[in-house]
Length: 132
Image (cartoon, rainbow, N blue to C red):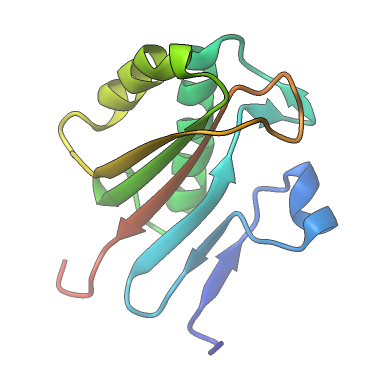
């Protein structure tokens, strides 16, 4: 990739271990944020599905901020959950963050995460073209 691709790290425990960036900003203005969970300093920082979703979105927003974007630039979200019973709680967290933004969104049920205490992981994609 070219030098105009920008990669940022959150310092999370798995980025170095597994060889990925928290976010990548492409020359066309698209920013891809890797899956974010509520793990802070190696510990799950939030309790239930709602709290984990809020904390996960905050980590994604922190990554966006590093490349000059914000919540209002988000165009797509993906929410991964370990239980269908948590759909309403995670959906509530999403609505609180994005009700006025209305990105394209997916909610996917998965079998589990790296840490069994995690019940939510989120990804976001954001875009800001040069005309803005």
